[in-house]
Length: 290
Image (cartoon, rainbow, N blue to C red; front, side, top):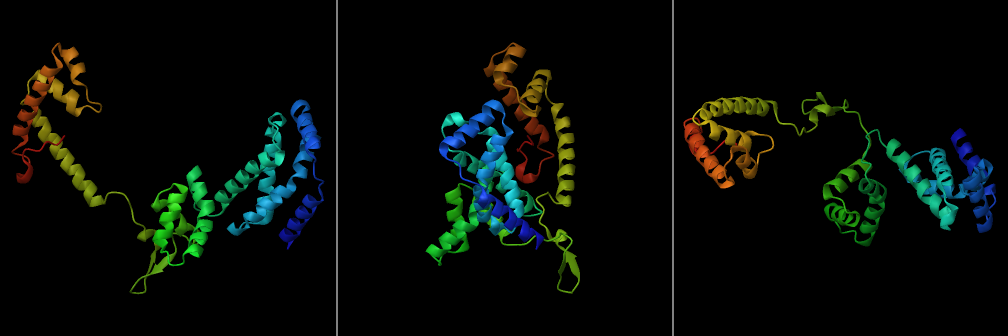
């Protein structure tokens, strides 16, 4: 009840503010810009509170208190008043509209869900336009499937289909705790956290990978013993370094041509393949580990 009363009070106050003529607005902006006249800045802001109210009403569909939206919009309005340049000959309402909208949208993104969404320009556009575009497409052709609607929206906004599907799922569902129990077949509860799909490698695969890696490292160390000093230097620099050296770099270092470096590397690789052949699986004995 108090919140509704506060909303009405703010709206009544905003509607009571006088409009500014172009010349008066310009004079106030110059007084603020050139003489740091705080009173002039406040008059410009107060005269445009109607713009804040109107824009807040457009965002009410996101379920946040109107009073909070108005307060956030007023912060954007003050920021616009502080940055406004009267020399550009643009009406203040045109300039302020962007700041008011941006301030409200940032507030909505921070508070609409306990799960923070994307903050890139494309993600913001998707968040604030998805429901409108979805309703428009469904109204135009109610036979369209969700997949087709999502694809149309992705093309219109320049985002991926996966982003549209993920955002649509967020907008049509409520936040729930990961500790919420989910009933199983036998009646026992399992927490949602335990049912989340992980993108990480399975523990048994991680262990297998580590063991295989250590095994190949040992085999490779042994096989490297079949190379002479120059071959070893070239293989380490070309194949085992994080950033492989070029043929030109090694040729300059060893005092030989890059073609000669390539020939030595090819010969060294053949030696390693032969040395590693007894360790490799039957179906891939000639394949190198690098």
